[in-house]
Image 1 (cartoon, rainbow, N blue to C red):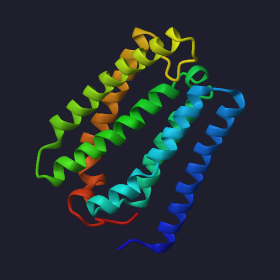
Image 2: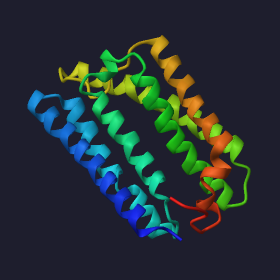
Image 3: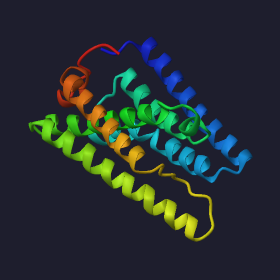
Image 4: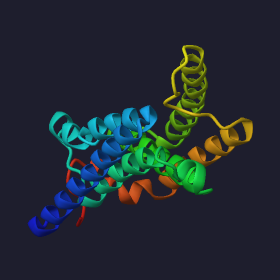
Length: 194
């Protein structure tokens, strides 16, 4: 059974993360940074997906799972304000974090359907990672072509390879710890404390 106090604290923390995303949006507007504005907007919208998933699929996120998911969105959006260029490990962190969230979703869906998650997690995380890198290049080229500031910036082949490597790290973390940390999704119950 979920402790109401822990749930309340977690909801407040989740709300705080959303405020952080809104702050990125506001700073992006102030700086006229289209990339930060667009990324913060989508991060804010996506931050409501755990609640939507709970209602649609009759699952319950543990408090830390909700916070982990929305924090991935905040770190990505905040990165657009400078950390991607100024903090050497920021991009690695965001790729690992986001890939582990995506891998966790795939893992939970596979286990819920009685399937082996290993090939599915690897295929989806690597496949969508490659697709994301291609989309990044296309969006960058399209925005440059029409004379707008790109909302996504590829940093070259080495960066792309590192991005894919850290996507893979996120997938491997899910494979190593997913059965224990995500059991509440495939058992249909809370499965433990928050």
